[in-house]
Amino acid sequence: MVNNVFSGECTMSSLVNWASNILREHGVDSPRLDAEVILAYLMGCRRIDLYTHPAKDISESVAVSYGKAIQRRAQRVPLQYITNHAEFMSLDFYVDERVLIPRPETELLVEAVIKKSQILSKEREIVIVDIGVGSGNIAITLATKISSARIFAVDISPDALIVAKINAERHHVLDKITFLCGDTFKPLEGYEIKSKVNFIVSNPPYVAIDEFENLQEEVRNYEPYGALVSGQDGLQMFKRIIADANIWLKPGGLIVCEVGEKQIQKVACLLEDAECFKRPEFIEDYQHIYRIIVAQMGGNCG
Image 1 (cartoon, rainbow, N blue to C red):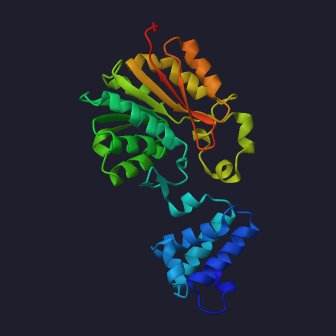
Image 2: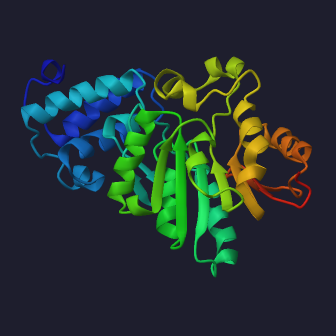
Image 3: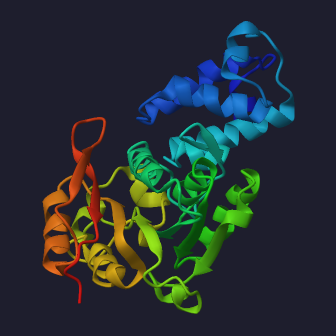
């Protein structure tokens, strides 16, 4: 594909210009940025090097790989799946089609847990359960930021756990995280942590079935369906997590979840109905939409 376009030598600037035009024609939001990121990835260089050495010749093998990668991006394969890279709280995570791509708003969830954990700094061990671990971005970041953290990371997808373990090894926290395959709290039954958990954290599936077709093309066609959709109302996983949270949380323990754009009040009602939690705290995202809910165990649980 690339060789058919270029009659002369392939250089950094000519390839980026060609790719930018292709991606623009296919409606990609940031065509030049994506073209540059993909070429820098294949070249093993920084984006700025594309500007400082625009006339640098590109080998035929790289040019062919670049053409294939641009074709994939034109088909709306997410950029992060092409480069196998996603940044989360300044940490580098490996991602592919087996896991969701980490989002900036999820950083607010992690920041909230870190802030709340500072109150528990004198405890020998801070026990955290992460439901729906995905790429491991939440569990691994908490493991790097909270020195006394002991984390149980649960996912129903064996494939997702493979990716999460790759990332845990990359960030040298494999010894602080127990990865478990199964549904919500069931894999925890073999561990003596009932009523001992400080935090239950989750960025669960929260898209309603009817909303799925309205998702961005990159998300709808390529990210894992099971990590996105949660029943007719998008609340199925919240209901299940909240229903059993009191069994695992210690008195004063916290549940911290990311929610969909219009779900904050609905999830707050679920917490109120459980009669186990104090009035929740809401945290806004960067667009001033409430996306994180924090609720503390009260004293009314049966």
